[in-house]
Amino acid sequence: MAATANVTLTDRAARRIQEIVAGEPTNTMLRISVEGGGCSGFQYKFDLVNKSASDDVVIEKSAARVLIDPVSLEYLAGSEIDFVDDLIGASFKIQNPNATASCGCGTSFSL
Image 1 (cartoon, rainbow, N blue to C red):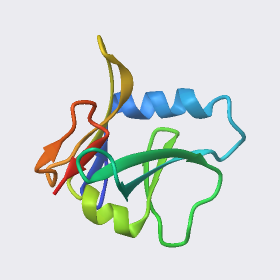
Image 2: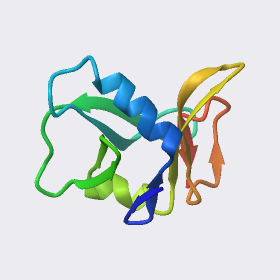
Image 3: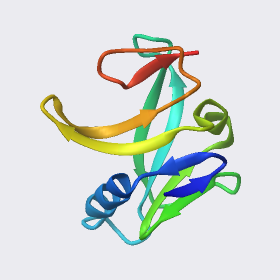
Image 4: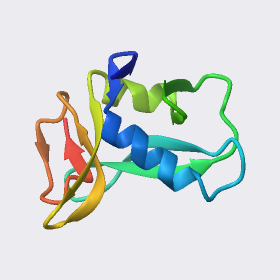
């Protein structure tokens, strides 16, 4: 697993990111951020971007690149980014040790 600031990216997540950006312009990366909102207080946001900010943390594994801004990184410290494909659908899943509760869909959490 790739690890930066204690955030790891699984092989499954890296493969899925590669598949997603394959049809996008060159240098497309996945940005993961944490925002206020969602049913549990905070929510994860996933965006495709072509540029990184100077203070972004970049997690690379194979040809997949994930960007995380410094504020979001505080909330994501120690997390594992995975991709799951199960009966309820396919999605990125973040195993966040900082979250004290999360919603059923896994896209929002509380501290």
